[in-house]
Length: 211
Image (tube, rainbow, N blue to C red; front, side, top):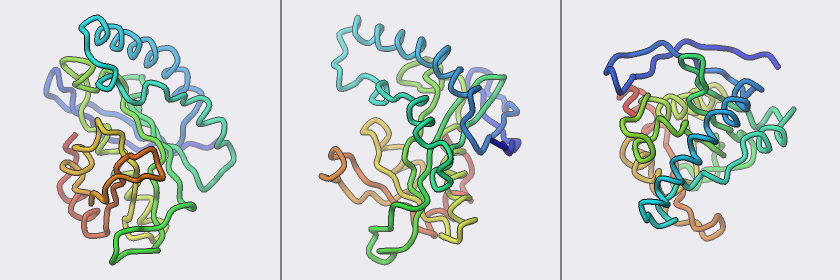
C-alpha cells in the first residue's frame, strides 16, 4: 500500500499551541497497532471510570465495540472504500473509512446525486472531552471531515458527503460541521442521518478547523 502523507496542524488543548501532524490517506498496521496497544486500554479505563461513577451505559462511548482491525481487513483491495488516519507526536489520533460507491444523496434538491459516505470515523479516546479532561488534541474530527469533502470534490461530487451519526456526535455534525439533519433512519439502527450540500461544504471549509 502506498500512503500519501500531508502536513496538517492540530491544536494541543493543554498548551493551546498548534502542533505539526500528518494526514495519511490510508490505515496501516501502524494505526491498528496504536488502536490495539493505546486506544483500547485507554477506552477500557474510561469505561471503568464511568461504571464506577454510576453513569448509565447509554452515556458510555458508543463506538467502544468497534473493531478497526476487522473493519480494515474486510476492506483490503476495495478502492471504493478508502481509509484515512491522522498521526501526531508519533501516535494515531483518528481514523476514518469512506464509501464512494454505495450511497446517493437524499436531500431533495440533491436527490440521487453521488456522495462520499463516511462509513466510520473515530477520535482517539484522549482527544474526547467526555472521556479525558482535558482533551489532548482538537481538530481531528474537523480535519477528517475536510478530507472527506476533498475526496468528494476530487471525484467531482462537489463536496457532497453523508453519514449516520452516533448520538454522542449529533451536535458536532449539526453545529460544528453545519450539515443537514435528515432525521432518524429506521433502516439504520435509528441513527440520525446527516448530509452536507456543496454550499455547506464550501462554508465549512471557509470556517476552518474548529474541533
